[in-house]
Length: 279
Length: 324
Image (cartoon, rainbow over all chains, first blue to last red; front, side, top):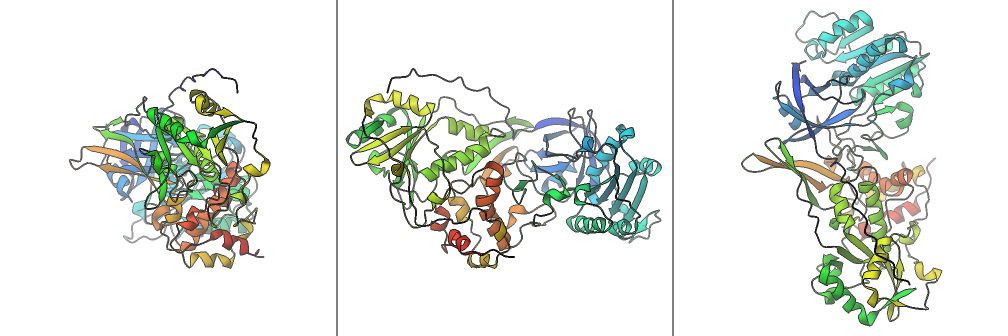
């Protein structure tokens, strides 16, 4: 074999470390309910409703949080205090630094849905990603038809985004329910499951898309109800919940039957995963 | 064709050791790949019990340290010695290819890439399957190596598989001799006794035959730990005793463990052992293939060999009948 001259390859330019979070400033913290709060940071980058960020507190850990806004000037994250990281997030105040990396995942494909009427069905903190859609619709008013909203919460104290609700009530067809009303508070919403409201609603499936986000049981029942009303699986978009660890499509924690929630989701068109067993 | 005479093979290894880190299969309590200090311990034809993945995808890796909201990435030393890995079997090499796809294709993992780039992979062809648990000949393995050695009587025939391998041969040219010998197709082939006889396992998801494996599975995760391809990991933060400095650590993790799919609030998506058992096998044989065009499993048989109850999932799959 002839001797070949050794070719030294120039080392490739160092790419950014995908695990390193970047700092953002918290510009606002708003308590939404007993266990939910909204954090606004000054992140100036592009993201879509439905995507998520990995939010971290050094020394505590990382947690995936979905975006609850649509803007290039700030980022809203709606956090529910359920775990270690989220409980510590609750202690942060305006002016503190929040470490995030992202955005990750596929958001709602809003641009593809121009011209359609929109139905939003959310349960509990699942309302947060849908808030991003409403902001998007606000900014592209002429591109969408009617907007129907069905939001369900556990108790009147758990109702999120009370500020925004006032606007939504004026602009859209807003339906809110609470599962129960233990304090017998005066409320202007139904006391039933949100699925009961959806069941009763008169909906013509034509030219509509439905976005569902909420607890697994609620999503399952809602999808059945919608199918009974004549909706096709292609008209339904759901947002799935998994604990993403790396968010880069490697670590395997968010895998649903060969699909990575962090790459292929968290938003799925229902027909893409309806065949997959729920595990 | 090039060859290395077996008589000068030890000199060759000693020469490599002088300026490089040499990693090769050795017999310890079990058999494993180790950094070599004494070349007499090397057993080239050993199919190690433990895989070689720990050299690239480490059991534990500190991704970054944080102190006072300042992040530092542990020093990635640039003048580390080149590493020469020798004695990798075709299944090991193909597993490294699969891990490369996960860690270096879509997003480059700098920790993995650094280790990978400084390594030269020298394979060793098995003339015979190591034992009855090997099933690599049914897994469509490809050629992936820098150099491949074929054991032929008193010499190793050498095949060059990459530019990196060619440069390596140039550097150690005095040990490589031209030869008239050549490799026939059957020299490259290997026939294992155990064979996966199904191309597509998707119709068998609800088969009652899974019980044969699930009922004797402990969910101990030995299969995943011993798998040379399995790449799932966990990220967690560790904080020092003074609560000042924290480190983000990456550890091997296993889909066989109960808490693997736990989300905030306590819900576990793969709650039953059956779900977890099937998830591993479907990921190995089907999901990865759907996504990347090749199965994650490379047929090394380590998961069966190392299983406390010797669950032979290939046999279970072979015996399965389609459910209607």
